[in-house]
Length: 640
Image (tube, rainbow, N blue to C red; front, top):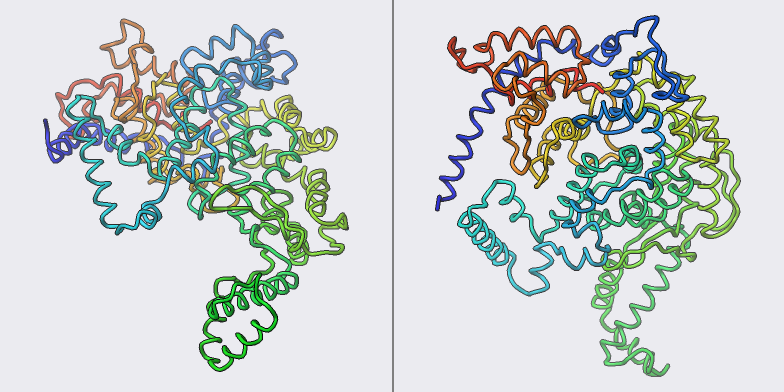
């Protein structure tokens, strides 16, 4: 059985050739990327206009206003925007089915069978566990050591020994892989919650036939972002996504908005669970302090408060007054245990600016909005968290915010302003622009946003109808929209897995790649989630990571994931690099290849020594893995 050091050296030897190829290939492929500042702007030129006599058949496009794209281009646009990219053979299947019919199915996800996906997710118990169960099952080591009354160092040592024993057993069984070892290291720890949620998100993007639904679920989670590493939010996330985001992803926006406002995850993340009316809280705190001080005083005299007589209380107080310093120290200790709280503006500000309207507000609006949501808190946040409205800490009286006068009283104050703002034209504009930015281009046409706004207001915020209006717009199918967006790291990994027909058995290494490229799942600190604009993701370092991932995936150097490229190649292309390259263009890009990418890769494949890290003139010609990796790492695949 190999030692840990031997396994590490063997792993390094396995990676070195692939890494060398990746680095050398990256230098070549970077030369065909457009200059970074104009990367997104230049992308529209990748879609040539169809011939003037070209007409899409009615059975294919239905009522879709497609006039500037060919069949292949329209299908690729739909799969890259409404899904996470095509799978092998999917372009041809949609041609036979008709694009309009495929879109109708995507807009009605309940009609599709996702049993194969559910089979893959069946081992992820976290997805089905309540927050109470997660808090009880995944206990941090510090808390566990405190419960068991043993030193933290001793518990950490025990944990290390258990991991070593399990990995040794794995090696002995012959099933050792870096991914399996990584799974053992995080098993039973809070990190496993994050790993299972992240893996499930990726697997859904890759294998769920309800692709548009997954797109929208991820869009809304990003819009109503919650950071996993803030307090207990890691334990809250499973219920937040399962019960708050996903059920309403294609429903009414107001229902989704109300659900997020009452979610323990959002309440904790933006600190609204601590927001109270300062005056009411000060009075309540003073009453609590007086009672606790009296109870502590009587305990020092051996008296139980409910049974104490007035005479006993007076004698005890007189005795305590003979020791004023001791009494003052005792009262100060009690006061420290009851924190001073007041109005918290975090949720009120982010609700207006990031969730609803944009920047159309004043500081007075923030204060009034925060007053509206005082008393919206969490019952038992560390045991069994659930939304709780504490009327005793809610600011009473009328409030005026963003032009609305709110005087419903109690919890209805918050519910009323959410209802009013969900139907506000400013909200319609902000949300429709965000949706158009996600699905169409970084700077969507004003005409498209106005059309979506109109449908939003008429339908009272029906997300499905708004998306339908976007898809039915000519701007969505324009040449300017084709290839107009740059894939985020998550989109890139999901689309590469789909394009190659990859079989993911352990997603942890893939999650590592997504994090390395700058988008670790559930770990965005900012309340507005990860940016989706090209400028965020296009840099030299980012492109290097993307190319390295593409080649690692295509050459089967991502532990836990298997790619069978032979299924994508014609039988006679197995040993011919030029034919392999053309097959990759067809399989990965549906032959929608820019002239610069095609010329550069054809030239490099014809001169294989330029792809060899040692520039050996007698180097063997590149194989399918490297060639497919180059195509996956090309600018044509990076765009969507």
